[in-house]
Image 1: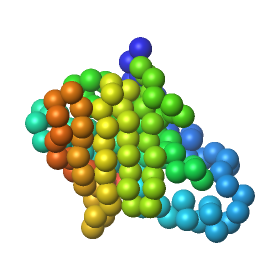
Image 2 (image 1 turned 30 degrees about the vertical axis):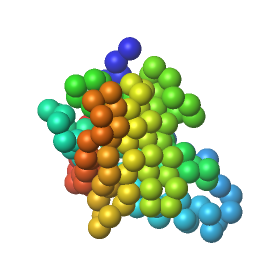
Image 3 (image 1 turned 90 degrees about the horizontal axis):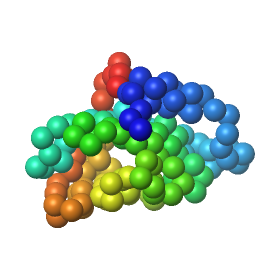
Length: 139
């Protein structure tokens, strides 16, 4: 099942408004200031289309909520485990690891406000770069 991008954006907007999360204010501030929450535009060397990444929330255990859209392959939401329709993203310090619903893995590090690293999939390893999208971005 393909999820229209508008539904993804609405879902993610409502997820941001949730009051769930850690009760310890120091932990809550740490995750709220994680710098990865928001819209990102990505390029992977060898892919013909751009990738859209939306991170709406970082849970206390480091798992992220949101979704990813790869125009060649459709989109998926982040869940607690990798399935045919969901991926898993985990933030540890400045390192973000995303396992896609198609089996690929992004390993990204925050460098100068960008997420840089690589993508490993069935085509081998490729360089990946995500830059923050404008605040007016819609997906």
